[in-house]
Image (cartoon, rainbow, N blue to C red; front, side, top):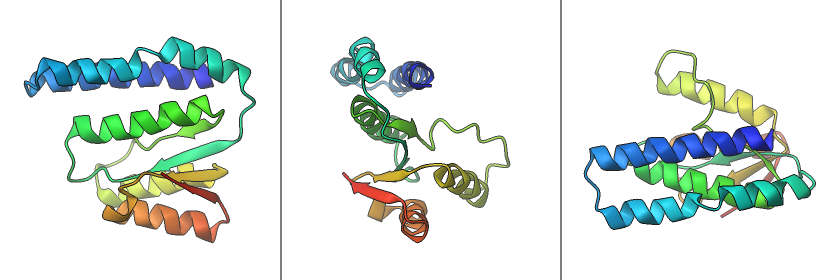
Length: 148
């Protein structure tokens, strides 16, 4: 499962890199993003040794941010949580086989959160109506909440 998550992170890096190229971000920003992902092999080795600490859902602001900005924030959090031995669940990697409405996204996200033991709230979670609902939901269902 962790190897699958790392593969998804690698794919997210490629998507983000393509997006950065498309919006003509300076090369130095792309290199900074690459450095974040270049240690995936090391993380895979660390994660293989760690005993999983359960599933953790990542909550944070997505709406109103550039694709590269929210992808980077979620990916950095996911990498750190994988290093700590968690199995991560990110709204960015859910299948989203539904209509593209905010309500549909939230329904799927909350279903995913139900299957988790913990919630990791990114530092910008309070700026997002959806993330605030996810934190409330986690409290309501006695999930452990870890704040960035």
